[in-house]
Length: 390
Image (cartoon, helix red, strand yellow):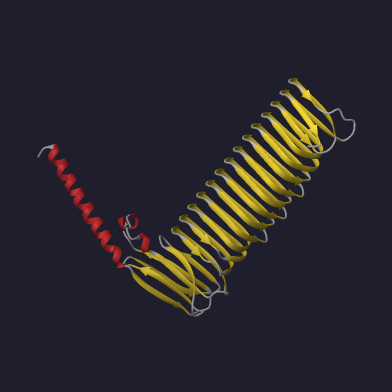
């Protein structure tokens, strides 16, 4: 037998084995059996350790707790109550191929029926699962950790709601939390209609963050790559946004301090009232602010245009740019300091200013006023043109 014949025989045997395996795996899809576990013992903590099952919560119709699982021969579940803890655990006796070539994944699920109004602590730890918790449930605290999967949480928690997934989306809506901590490596985060008594922290590596209609004491979000969109926020303390690459948009809201930083990306702020400081930092990107009121306003950046419209600071406004035009439309502040190496500075201020302007290469056109607040404008290469009252 020559080498070519051996290769053909080995290939045929391989195809035969794979076919047998595929058929046996496919035939296993229909072997799921629904098993229901009535929970009559009292408990205050729910602990779920699952593998590949989706986890769904639903209100019970009889006011009792019940757990429904889909079992198969080598993938079963244990449901028990010990020391006030309801434990739901996956018992996985499958082979290597059975685990990693599971063609019946879509049928794997655990459904937990709970009486609405009851107060439990919830802890979920799974490998590859989706978690669905509808509105109407109130927990003492929620702690969910996934490797791969989406989480939709409409439930409230008296204390902390903590959700972490490596790959997947997180959505929290129509809920209350004492504190909210969300983390995802690759995936998007959506937070909508949420009231939080304490701090909200959102961490992503790659993914967008969308936040709307939220109240909290403090909001902070950190991420490498992705867009941040925030609308209708009320933070009694501060809002901190940090991105490496990605645009940041903030529309309508009120907070104590606002700090936005991105290396590469545009920053857009509109309709925001800050009781203290507004601070923006960008390496490469444009900054646009409109209808913003604050105590002080500061912005630093290397490359990018800056446009301020109806931005009013009670105290100091300080702007620094390396390359980029700076334009004001109907802005004002107690003191104004503007510095740019390459770029024009132009626009209008609402009240009289004593303006000191210098440029190495460019024209200067400013009002000659002897009354008003101090304004200093410095540009190396660029024109300076300022008017008052428009």
